[in-house]
Amino acid sequence: MLHMAHSDRPFTSDELAGFLGTNPVLVRRVLAGLRERGYVGSDKGHGGGWSISCDLRKVTLHDIYEAVGSPTVFAMGNRAEQPQCLVERAVNEALGSAFDEAEALLISRFKHVTLADLSASFNTHHKGAHHEHR
Image (tube, rainbow, N blue to C red; front, side):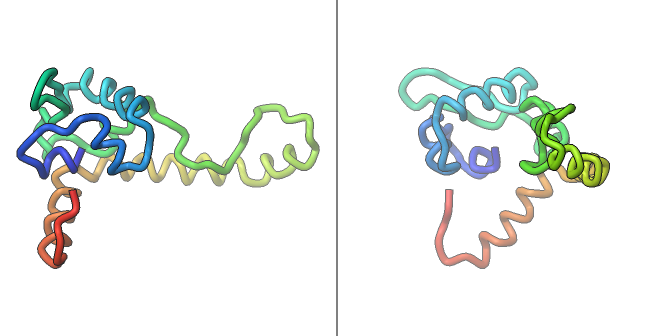
């Protein structure tokens, strides 16, 4: 979204996928969820693509997190509620609540970071850079 916010033109899903090093189909799926919330918009045809349609000061990382389906934050953690493997069960018992607490804290912090905050940070770093990255 910040790529779009710092551009004077729309981006195609192929361009955005290139920035993210991922598949354009995945980008379109995520952007569709963001469009449902009114955070981005899209125009078809020549010169069309995706662009920001929200006030960056009013949208938090938590809003974005929810718009993309509240995915699991950590790659580590419980894979199965009742694992058959006794080792996995022991690890889950020892670390389960720690992962839950860490995830809750991180998601809570998302509420205090707006897209405008990230944009300002980008602008600060961009001023010191010798080249433009978009």
